[in-house]
Length: 143
Image 1 (cartoon, rainbow, N blue to C red):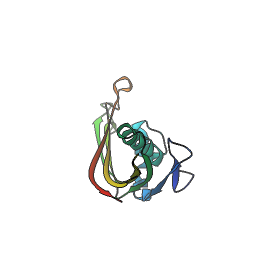
Image 2: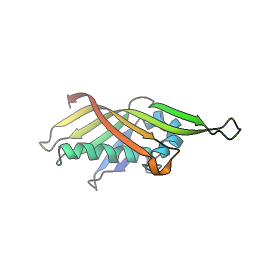
Image 3: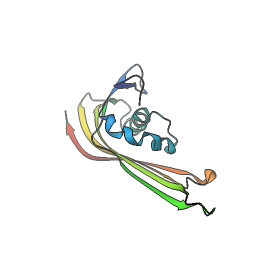
Image 4: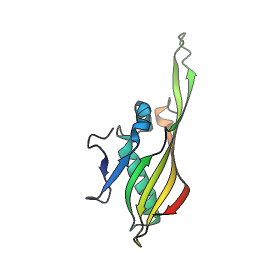
């Protein structure tokens, strides 16, 4: 996890984004690296969520990110066909249930429940790897 503890630098430095609950996701940390987003998964989640939020409202500021539960993880593998019982992982998906606090450009604070989803396919073919990222807001409330 992030060596700086409970926050990461926002893309709008010097602001920082508070982090909570990421111990719930730590078990899968070695697999998150398969996504090619870097080894610090709270930091890449902040980066990707900021990208989505700021595209919608350039004057917004992400305040905090909380992992609400263990991420849903899915892998698929195919046999190596080399006479062993080994297999190659060809697909990996991770969906992070998150609570996001953000201040809009009009200075309203919102709490969003988000499902941040990553799907890496064709993992066994370096030239054909494909990462899909999906940002879904499933609930929102002022405050």
